[in-house]
Structures are given as C-alpha cells and as structure tokens.
Amino acid sequence: MPSIAKRGGSPISPAPKNLPEALAGSDGDSTPQKRKLRSHASAAAAALREGGAVDPAAKRVSPRRCLNQSPNTPPKRIEKAVADKPSKLKKSPAKGLPDSLVADSKWNPRDPQQMSAAKEALHVSTLPPSVSCRENEQKMIVDFCKGCIEHGKAGSLYICGCPGTGKSLSMEKVKALVLHWTQEAGLQQPEVLALNCTSLSSTSEIFSKILSKYQLPKMTNNRTSALQQLQKLYSEKQQSRKMMLIIADELDYLITKDRAVLHDLFMLTTFPFSKCILVGIANAIDLADRFLPRLQSLNCKPTIVTFRAYSPYQIVRILQERLKVLPHPVFQPHALELCARKVAAASGDMRKALCICRGAIDMLEAELQESTRSTYLSMHDEDKGQQAVTMPEFSKLQEIDAVRIDHMVLALSRTFRSPVVDTIQILPQHQQIILCSAVKLFRGRQKDTTVGELHKSYLDVCKSTHIPAAGFLEFSSMCRVLNDQGLLKLGQSREDKLRRIALKVDEADITFALQGVRFFRNCLQ
Image (cartoon, rainbow, N blue to C red; front, side):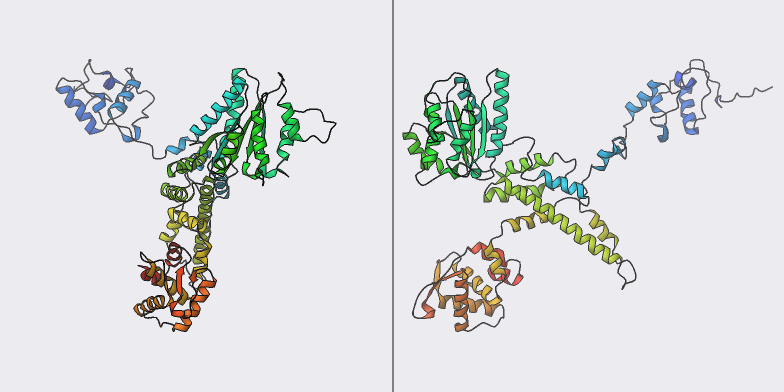
C-alpha cells in the first residue's frame, strides 16, 4: 500500500536527517514550518539533490517580513539577512521624534510665534550666546587687566572702532572673564564700575561716580571736589584698597573745550598708589591721535586696541550663530551672503546687518499677507461663480517658507536709500531727462559744462526717444529749479547759455533712482 506523505513533508523526497537547522524547523524543535512558496521549495529541493546545504541568506524573504520575522525565527538568521541585504531607510524618520521637534523641524512663516522668535533672535538688544570674531581683541584686553591685577598697578586702555563692531559687547565678556579668572586664581576680585558717559548730567560727574564706589565718609569741607578727593586718595598708601576696573563707554562725550576732564581722568592712573584700571570706549578712531601727544607728555598714554569693521565672512558667521537658537532655517544662504557683502562694503556695522535681516523678515511677512489675501479673494469671487485660484498658484503660496534673496534686496534698498533718490524719482519727466543728459555728458569727461552744451545733449536724448523737447527758456528755468533743489549747480554769467553747470549729487544716485524705468535705463546705457 503506497505510503501517504505526511503533512508538511517535501513532495519530492523525505527530509534527510542531516537537514540544516534552518530548514528542519524554525529553531530546531518540532514546531511545523509554514508553507513555503513553490519557487522557494523547488530551489531548496534542487540544492539538496546536489548534496549541498541551503544558504539561509539566499532564500527569498518576503519584503513584508524583512526584519520582523515570526517570533520563533533565530536571531542569527535575522542578522545574516540584514547584513547581506541593504536596509532601506524609513519613509518617515521623524515618526520616532517627539511631537515638538517634528512640529518645529520646518519654519512656518505663517506662525506668529515663530516669526516673533526669529525677529527676537536678530534684535540688537538680544545678547548672543558667544561673542564671535573678536577673540584676539578680547584676549588683548583680558591680558592687560590680568597684568594690572597681578602686579597691583594702575593702567589705562583705549578701545576704538566704528559703530557696531562689538566693542561694548566684548567688554561685557571681558568683565565676566576677569572676574572668573580672579576667583580661580585666588586673588581679590576688583570693584567694577561700568557706565555710559551719555547718561552723565555733566562731564565732571564721572569723578563722583568713581568716588562713590569707595564708600568713604562724607567730607566736612564741601569745597573739595570729587576729583581732588580721588587725587588725594590715590596719593596715600592703603593696603586694604581693592583694584577698581572702570569701563567708560562713549568716552568722546567727555570732550570739553579745554579737554580737562578727559586729561584728568587718564591722569588718575599715574598717581603712585592708584589702583584703578581705566578702559575707555569710543567710536572716534582719531580720538587717540588727537589726545595722544598731550597724554604722552602727562605720562598717561593708554594702550590702544582697535576694533576693525566686520568682513562679509564674519557678518555671515555672526548671523548664523544667532539663528542657531532656532530649530529651523529662516534665511536662504545667498540672502545672508548678500546682506553681509553690502553691509561690509558700506560700514561693517553689525547692528545695521541685524536691522536689515529683520526688515527682510518683514518683507516676507508682507508678501505672505498679500498672497493670502489675493488667494482668498480669488477663491471667493462671486462674479466668476467658481474658484479662480489654480493649484499651481496655491502650491506657490505654500512654497514660501524662507527669506529669499529678493526680500533681502528690498530690505537693503530701504536701508541704504538716499533722500536724493526719493527727490529724483518724484521729479517731472523733463527734469529727469535733464539729469540723464548731464550723466551721459559728464561720464568719463569734464566735471562741468555750459547750459548751452547741456541743452544740446538734452535735445539729442529727446530726439532719440521721440519726445517733444522743451524750448531753451523753459529748459533754463528747469535748470534753475534743479539748482534750487540741490541737484545741479549753476554758475553766474550774463548769458544763460554760457553759465557753467555741474552735477551736485553722485551719478550713482541718479542711475539708481531711474533704473526702474525702462526709458531712462535705455537712455543711461
């Protein structure tokens, strides 16, 4: 009687005893295997007929169970399959993150809270986490203060630089570093007096501020000034007196007619028992040059540390570090680079760069509001009776997710715009043509000409553009109007045609003001 094949057995031949563990069962026990695909079973049988073992990695694994096999699958088999078969990334890697991080992974400019956070990070009053690009200057100031404290001697330092170059911000960092260093070194911490000279009611009040830090008993003789008391104090030897770090910001406000206050302030460091470290900060770079000869003759010449204007690379770096506190990118890289290059070429003022970036965010916000309003009106247009907004327009609205380079261009133009540009743009057309004619006439040639020569150039421009030209009398009166507005400079002569005329404004301002109109753009080419 023919034998009936057992359930789960091979249709070709009974399973040999030396069957590999991977085919005998899920992990070698008597648990029956699940039914395999035909192609899979045929490949396994062919391998057995040839006398070889079946490689588990070569077996077809269902893509639905590439990692998560049945609970009885041996770990080695899973590791082998994963090692031999390249693993695919998950489609949604953000699923394993907290909801807060997933929500903030992309900046949404339509969210008022995120817009407010971006503006706050770029505000001038917001202290950055670190003062970048001023490490060398900070080291020089810290080393100077350390030397004075270690030797117990007074000294003076003058910090100069253009506005917005990080002078005051660096001094806040230096003050913290000096106090931390004295604490670690086991030295007596100095008294710190930080003041802004613009807040003083009078220039001599700075001596009263310094004297109040010593908490001396009130003098019975009111005729003795605060300066005289300080001079007497620094002339007497006292062992218990602490060192005093005086940080005087906006030092140029102390300049008087005789400049006595500034000289007396620096002379406080020359007394034999003086223990004050004077650090003066001012925007005037030539202040030291004007006062150095006098201070040098008084034996109180300060050490000078110059803060140079920021370079484009430094401005981009500082902006990026400020934006690091946000969990999402706000600006396109080219937009930040454009802002940095323009500011570095103009002044290198970091405060101006921050204001421009905030203005670019305002440009994006205004564009979003306008786009949202126009889209809403198009979708609810009752006259058309249907939705007028198309999907590409809606997708374009959704793609506005960062400050682009065109937003930065608008913010830059508003910041660096000259009042002359506004004046030129509101002039009548013929007066604008006169300015164009003057630019073409003076380009690469003489600086001035006669009214008659300028009138010929004006006629040529009008003829080439098919615009009726004004007569000479009207042209002469328009030149007088431009002279009254400060755009042209007219000389004196008996005849109007012989009067000398020249541009009183920069040619670049005229070109910038009129380049938005194709007519004038063609004229100026």
